[in-house]
Image 1 (tube, rainbow, N blue to C red):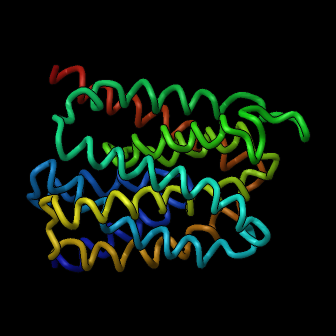
Image 2 (image 1 turned 135 degrees about the horizontal axis):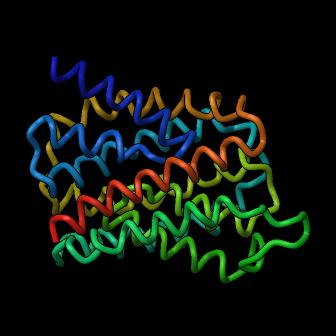
Length: 248
């Protein structure tokens, strides 16, 4: 039953990850409920999330067509950021980031609610701007360190710079976030307290959910994806804030 439960949670979280960027909000509390300590749940979740990225890349091939160079540039920044974030998690207490996380998630969600930039008038320097890569790096540090709703923050940064429909931005976000997770996962696999028995079934669910998610996102009206991510993000920010500040 534990195996089936974890696989089912992974399936739901994989779909949620690729549609509204909230996989960890589903899977992390579930791992705690299965009895994993917080640090073990965090690193186990990050390792299993690798498979959401694989599934999302396979399911997003139409949106990713012709974007290999962009994904490559942003992927390098994301990988470096993921490595830095994972290193921080392994050598420092997570309390500081737990306190800052609600503010980051709320700010990113509010950014998504703003009117998207007009074609040809993007911010952060556009597709090849240094500002975009710096933003991706910073979000990837957060993803590697703490990660809850990191996809929402990544979506907000990409949406502020890329002159693409929301579903196209979402596809790039899925791959770039997966690269940040992948590098962090390598660190955790070698040095972190990963529960490998939980990784297997959770990863299967993530893989299938990640593959199904882009098809769901593709059927949503243009601004629905942006609005759904923003509203979910604000709800998550409130929840993270209550948990962090009440305990502080």
